[in-house]
Length: 162
Image (cartoon, rainbow, N blue to C red; front, top):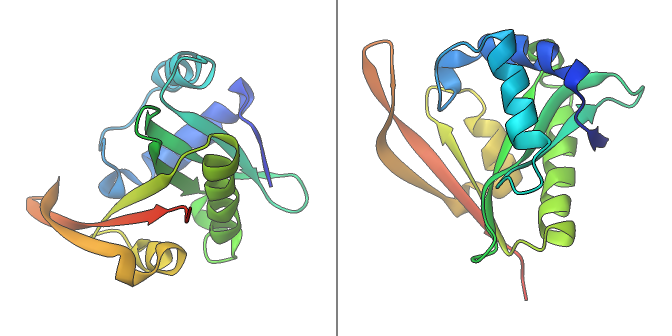
């Protein structure tokens, strides 16, 4: 289940994010102040090119966050982003959240295409293969530098049928 993100969610999300740096596009830890500034500047800003939601389990407990970012309104395209509490992964919560976010993107935001990028050093590549289908995947070479090595990424794309 999705709900609006709240400032009170940010500290827990920051900790989950900072525990996953090797798989993120921006691989540096965020301070509490930086996370709160992101909340104010992106989440609370209606002109932002991002829309994010809190992900809740079936008891209403915060287990992650996700959304659509890098939205190009003129092209009806955006990138899905999702982070689930490491202790809650593998329980189907991410798949449920991804499907709800895709519904929000295509039904409410009126986006035609949603894409995702996942670095090959991230075990979540299997997850994104299941969400998008491995036939909707292309490999982009040397997209992530981590621990002295370059990693490829998988780039996924899904468009709404017209």
